[in-house]
Image 1 (cartoon, rainbow, N blue to C red):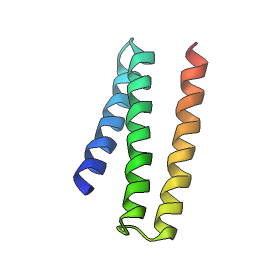
Image 2: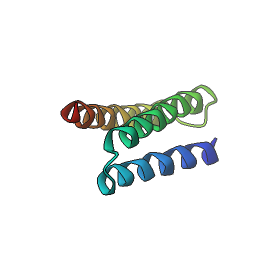
Image 3: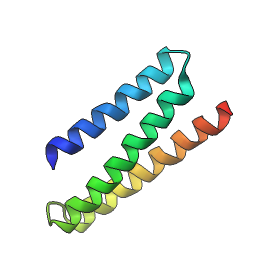
Image 4: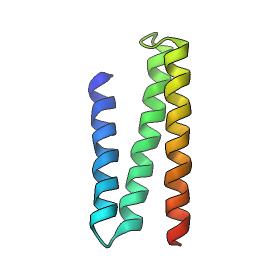
Length: 79
């Protein structure tokens, strides 16, 4: 699970950097949104598998939701 979370996190970050540096911003942001969804699912799986405490799950969920709101706002501003 740790490897999948690490990969999804790095993929999310890579796509954000790509959105900043390249002209094809909307596609990179949509890919970043996909990887953010993966992180949310992995967070839930980690809690269900008792790899995270509820407090850890809650903390990460709040931060992933905030990232999602920021990412959604960025995507919306480009349309």
